[in-house]
Image (tube, rainbow, N blue to C red; front, side, top):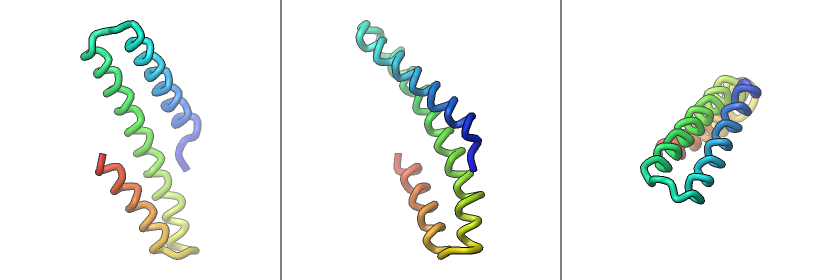
Length: 87
């Protein structure tokens, strides 16, 4: 399982950055500055998503291979990977 506190902290940081981006837009700030803040937010969210997916594979998928339908858990993880790489 992912470190809940760490993941929550990262999402809160991303939320704060998005609030900042909205303020920048309202203030008609320079487009490149807004874009840089958006890219920073995306990077945090991607890293957080990767941590959650790693935890899922280490925990849920590993357990599913022992007790449940292995193909179901593997396909679920692979589907998430596909979504991540499609972006």
